[in-house]
Image (cartoon, rainbow, N blue to C red; front, side, top):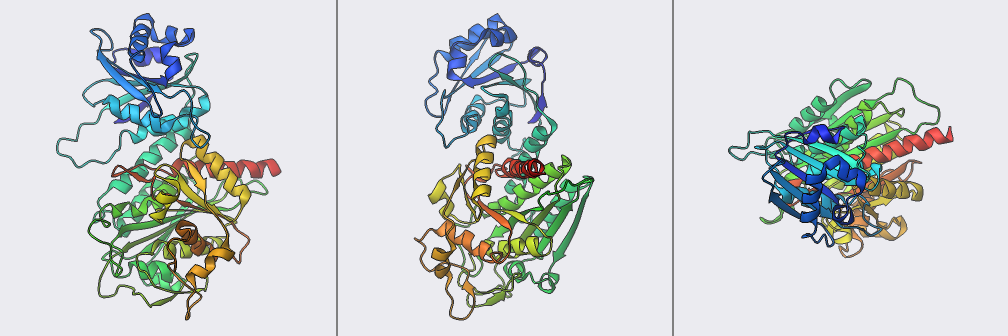
Length: 496
């Protein structure tokens, strides 16, 4: 499905065959005068009649009827009136559920009317609609592309302005999901780097380069090299830098670092037959970081911004890295390998160190499908974050609630977690001794260890759960990182 953003409700409704109205339950049961006038009396009566049969409950409800008039098919999605303080006030999970359940198809002229309590809710509800219509499909007969007209209005029926950055964020998030859904043999490290260059091509102020194969070792990136060296496609680091035409004094130098394991067999510590499927999604962090960077650079934010994608396939072969190997990573610290399936942290350790030491970043956001333990810690819909800065942690939490890319903080306490990585022959091992001791926090601690001697602010986003739901990529993290960087840039302007 392609989206067309309508600025006027009347024009959108003309000739529509299937209309979906999504709103909080209280609004549907008693539409305000302005909204009723915008819909028209006949439609408003039908909406109210359907809504009387719905019970939104905790996550929403949907009903559909044939009207015998225009539109021929009417669906109503009722959202819960209230949400908890750990949710996004726009109720994006409920929006996605009711939009998916309404079953809009490419065969009809479709329209979705989204009624929001606050115009600021436009982004999260549009992201939710986008997730209901993933771009990637290889099903036979799936070639037809439909169009959905989408209009967001406030409770008075006034259309909300959908600014270019919101549109770009929704589109980029869908593209990130498409990359996650792609088959791993087609989207190997080389192909993902090619996709990145294609996405960034033509954006003013952006320059890209790659370090691949043996050149990784020459640049001190032994972690990325080790993980991917036995795969058919060489491992690589893709670096993109955005330089604004004018940079204000005091602007932070921000870097987005993404884990891009295009397929994770587990290496010699191989995954079982039930754990390996879906490991194409192990590049969800890189996809989100790439998508966010493309939006931010395209919007010409006033801050210098870097993108570091750490790309490798964790394959099995005669040159696989092995348990008991010792690697010297970019930070200069040595790592004794005790689990080749704890590979993402090796990539990210090199990535964050490179971002700080080579690119001069003073604030680093890394995104990764890092641990299955993240789902145990914070669930399917909240990513786990770990940060060395309380101010940055709170900013990321606020960005999550604003965009619907929800997060929840985990413990940052290096003095309690470093001992889990004790090695008799190296500075650290790459996997913990006790898997019951805050495993996601420990994995983040490993990454931070490689920049702890710098003054950089850092936030790790473990998005293993929300990046891949119901066997589909979601593009999670794109909107989150866009909003975080914009907030950081705005705070620098305030200080200036």
